[in-house]
Image (tube, rainbow over all chains, first blue to last red; front, top):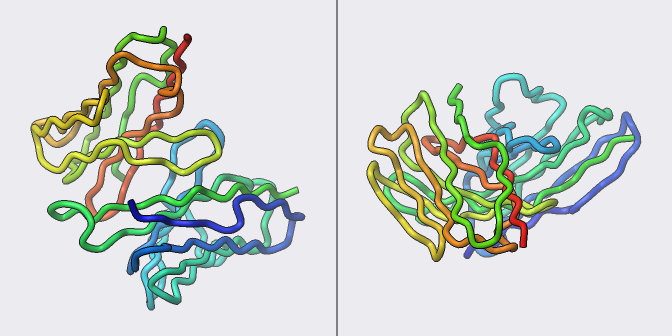
Length: 120
Length: 108
């Protein structure tokens, strides 16, 4: 199956600093990538949809100025958590949509391994 | 928004037992999917269902896409210890929405 990587796999930072997380599709091109956040023992919550070459679409309640998304190429999307605070500590997971992979109207999403962010 | 209600929240079973979990929604989905997530990792696709009424198997796993397109179930037969993990249902239209998860514990 298709492979999606994330870097770093974990990061610890001080409150007030910014953290960048990378999501790469390794063997396919993805015009659309998605960013999810998962708190302990909870489900994955969609934060934003990242579109190559255009602005990301954010879910209601997600601050676009705090969670900056850049999708500069067909294989890379980045999420920058700006001025991180302890409440931003979470597991961040990206997925990449493989065009033409799937059936019907569904193009399969391939998930990365996640990035654990801890803000002290 | 599109809410998915997944049950049960958790299950504790003996090795060899069968497992059943389900998801319901107030919204119609075009695709239903079931994922398994191990601690500290991303979700891994188990089964994808593309049309109402579809029944699909993957080894010991069987899932069905409800006729109303608002529900789906996942069955695991003859559970083994490595089935331990969190199982998520997901409904997909333009994007993917996840259920709250079912945490499965299998006792040897």
